[in-house]
Each structure stands twice: as structure tokens, then as C-alpha cells.
Length: 248
Image 1 (cartoon, rainbow, N blue to C red):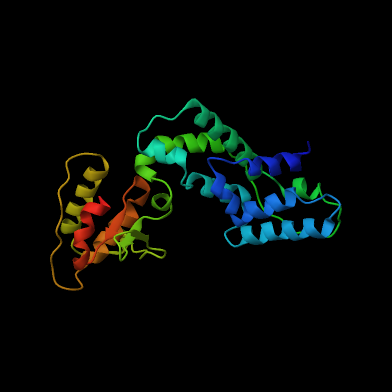
Image 2: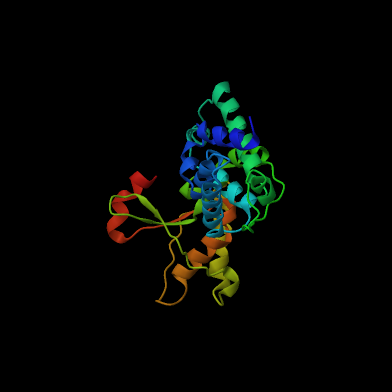
């Protein structure tokens, strides 16, 4: 079996990461791997489709795979997050698939072009050494901090019409360093947030004051400052308070 066939069949056999078959980069790679080696036009078409999809996000294939794998919502990470027992069969399946995805993450343009019978110049991308198995193990061990799925990709949310959480695609980037005044008041909120993240006693907080004094800005700045420590912000309107039990 050729390397191209091993990758193509490996992607066909994904179970835990099966929905990644619909990722545009991996889908184009699958199509390339399953194209006859003599069909150069189709190979060029799928190769270019893969690079085009990659360029929409970045030109680093390794970084791209690291992100989509670590943020992927699947049955394994759901069970890990719920503290459920994971069978040895599922553990073996996970590590087998991570080994395949790690191999794909480090595919260079030259490695793929070696499977093609063409000398025309084709677009390239970057790669770097990675260990997806190690990274994934670390992420699962810290699942309470990073979450998975939308909670790993986003740190600010609003509430939809039916009480579902909706990620804020472009959150306000304000930082604590940009804010002037009210240092003492803001310091109380910061220290309380640190206690919450450390699992210590933390209070509910009510910010009160005139319009424009920085209440909302303080909350957003703190959410930005501690997003990598696991802090997530959910904004509710007054008429959505009834959804609090559902959100919890």
C-alpha cells in the first residue's frame, strides 16, 4: 500500500474524529488520495482545492491540524468531560487516529507532489514538528480549563431565542491595560475572578454606576484577560433570566 493510499484509507476509517472528513482541507486531501495516479488533472484540482481551503485560514498545515483536532467535539472528549469511564477500545482508537492526523499535519508539499506526474509549479504551505497525541492528552487533562467544541474556540457568548448559547464571533478586544480610573474598584473584581478560577470562594458581583463609567467594559476586559485560564462570559438580557437554570 502506498503512503497516499494509507492516508486516504485512514481518513475513510475515522471514527472518533469522523466529522473531520467534512473539513474542507481534509476532504480535498481524501479526494486527492482516492484519485487515480494517472489522472493528473484531477490530482491538480484536488491538490489546489486543499491549498485553497488551507489559505483561507493560514498557510501552516501543522497549526491548522492542531487547532481543528484540539477543538474537535467528539464522543471521547464528551465522555472525558463528563468524567465517564472510557473503554480500552476507544482509547486505542483515539491514539490510532491521532497518529494518522499527526502524519497528515506534517505532510510537506514535496511529499504530496511526489505522488503526481506533473512538473508545473504548484502552491506550497508550511509545516513544523508536532505531537498531536501528547497535545491532545494534555488538553483532555485540562478539559475543565479549555473545554471543547465551541467552548474551546470562543470565550464570549450570548443567549439565543431558545436559550442556546451563541458564540460571539468578534468580541470587543478591550484590555485592562487600556482602562483608566477606578483601579481600586476594578481590582476587587479582578481578585474575585482569580479566586473563582482557582476554585476558591468567590462572590457574585454587581457593578453599579452612571452610564459610561466602564461597567460593561470592565467585564469584557476581564473576560479577555483570563480567557486562557478558562474564563467564559455569557451575556443575558433581562428577559432571558429565565434561561439561567437551562444554561447551568
